[in-house]
Image (tube, rainbow, N blue to C red):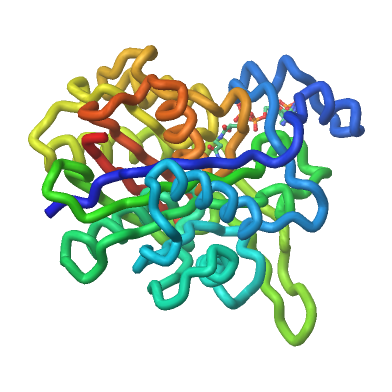
Length: 319
Ligand code: UT7
C-alpha cells in the first residue's frame, strides 16, 4: 500500500512585491543586496485581514479539482502552518469547515519551514497504516504578520502563500520514503519568542533569526536527510528526477544540490519569485512544476524542508 499524490494546488495573494518596492516603502535595503545574498527578486504579501486558512482553502480547492475528489471524500486534513488564524481552533478545522467536509480528522502541524515535509510524512503513515484513505495536506502561511518591518535582516526574506496536495491510498508506487528530525537545542537561532498571556502579547511577537547559524545548519541537514530518504528508497540522490528543497535562499539551494550531486537543472526554484513562504514553500514549488509540465508521472521527486525548532524533514516519491 502506497500513498500517492493525485492532485496539487497553490495560491499566492496579490501582485508581486519587488525588492525595489520594499526599498520604496522606506526599508533600508536595496535590490542588489537582496539578490546577491538570497536570490529573492519579489514575494507576495497578503492584504490586511487575509489569513492562512483563506490562502490554504484556495490551494486546497485547486488540488481537489486536479484530483477530481469531492471534499466530502477526505478522511484526513493536515495543515502545516506557523501563522495559524487563531490559537485555536486549528487552521485545519477552519479549512475543513470552509470545504464543507464533516468527519475527517483535522489538525495542524507546527514544524515551521519543515512543516509540509512533516505533514506529508504523517499523512503517508496514516494511509500506509490503512486507517485513512484520502488525505489533504496543506502548507499555508502569512509570515508577513510576524515580520518586524524595521529589521531589514529578516523582513526582506519572507512572503505569504499556500500549497496543497491530495493523497490517496493506492497499490501503485507513490511516497517511497519519508524522514523527519529535530534538534530542540537550536530553538534560539530562529524563533518568534512571544505568546498571548492574560489578554496581552508577552515576549517578542516578531521573527528573530541568527542568519549565519541557520545557513550552516540548513545546508548540513538538507544534505543528510536527502541521503537518508534516498537510501531508504534504495536509490542514490543523483538518481532523482527533481529536487524540491525548501525555498529560503538560492545559496542554500545551490549548495545542497551540489553536495547531493544533483544538476542545477533538476532543482525546482521559486525563491526568486516567492521569497521564503515557510511551510508553503515546498508545495508551492511542487504545484508550479507539476502544472508547467516539468514533473511528469513516474518521475522521482525529492522534497525537503528545514526550519525553526530546529526541524528538518524530507520525502522521496514517485509522482
Ligand atoms: O527557513 C529558514 C529561514 N532562514 C534562512 O534560510 C536564512 C539563512 N541565512 C541567510 O540566508 C543569510 O544569513 C542572510 C541572507 C539572512 C544574511 O546574509 P549574510 O551574508 O549572513 O549577511 P549578514 O547578516 O552577515 O549581514 C551582512 C551585512 C550587514 O552589514 P554590515 O554589518 O556588514 O555593515 C547587515 O547589516 O548586510 C547588512 N544587511 C543588509 N543590507 C541591505 C542585512 N540585511 C540587509 C538588507 N539590505 N536587507
